[in-house]
Length: 153
Length: 348
Image (tube, rainbow over all chains, first blue to last red; front, top):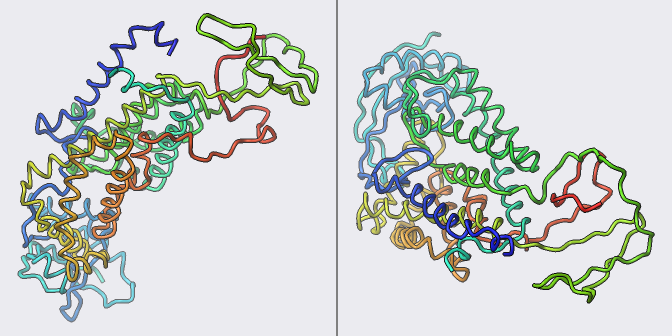
């Protein structure tokens, strides 16, 4: 405290800096502009509809069965957020064919996992009733195929 | 009045402990997520720079990104140890800011570590290494003073507002090597202010999160349906991407959906009411509630917010030095460094 008494500048500097820092942290909400690390923190804020379109890629076996591929095979990442974005962006930007070939190449490299060999890969969007699917295992309401490409044996 | 509240006197150890927590957390986090950060160096498509990197027109050189991804955990280790903090503190904050901003510059903003960066930036401007810091022992310029005789006692004069008095405050024992150990907790606003600022930053971010839910989702967010759809979306998305959805999501949505309405109300109350955590009586209930929210999100959505889950985000709200902390014995000190209070050299 003695130190502060000798430094009266601290008496106004600290409140001023504190207000400035808090205002800076809160500023994205005032400007409605999300960024990093200053953010509006909109996580889980938006109303999400009960039915959603989920972009992904599936493997197709010789018998026609469709099997799930791992996030690493689909999007070259173990983070599902990143993988979902990569697939969704590719579909939205008309790059589904290219992405399909890349995934088929990775799927080929991941052969021998004990399941039936894949003959092709499909980049798809699955229309899903979210709660029914998770709570009761309901199948997708619809499936749109954006690209199909063969998997090298 | 407001100045004293913003900068309450605090011991150097409290701020130093927070520095250790932030540095250790960052070290573990950056090491555990090293492959993800390393992979950003080879990304090419979808560069959408944000924050301090917004002026960039093209991705950073891969070599520079990799150098920073390697440097970040090393600097975190130095900050944890308090090693040359005046240099490593700001360097750590700057590198952490760039590495984490760069990861969010590929089309998706991530929110897992914003607070870590903000706290690191505040700490970098603070005297957070005045205690619990490794220091390289300087070479003495003059012979050290002769040690006091073993068994002697050092008389400490009482210091009053007008100066030293002649009345002794007490006597301190001198050990066999002639060393007097004085463990006097010195409290100073310089140490309390950064902690208060970090606490304010923490509660502000939670207020923003609560306001965002009400602004974007409206009062309908309180019904619990939005929360149910978010939980279901996370699980369903993970399922279609070949992951394993949370069994807790299945259980909650099948049998416990009624829980989501009170959970949604509690979430909004905790987030919008975050400033109440600055009141000591409500601090721990608020922290427990928010920690429970993050734990529930982790359990049902497999989405981890490690900084609050590890409690480091809430640490500036507490008097950390009151936790039990093992006191290092002199035998543990090496010849080249010491772990203990760092301050001005004693008078010769």
